[in-house]
Image (cartoon, rainbow, N blue to C red; front, side, top):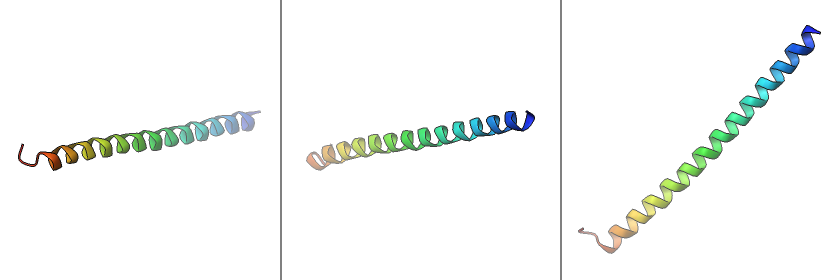
Length: 52
């Protein structure tokens, strides 16, 4: 019975790790998109008014 309990615990740990990694990847992707949008907006502002 101990082996089964350890197997379940390790599977749960692996599942939590996978979920955490996918969430991290999703969060970094979203942040990168936001930074890209903001930098593009700033660039457009400066392209229109370069000496502001």
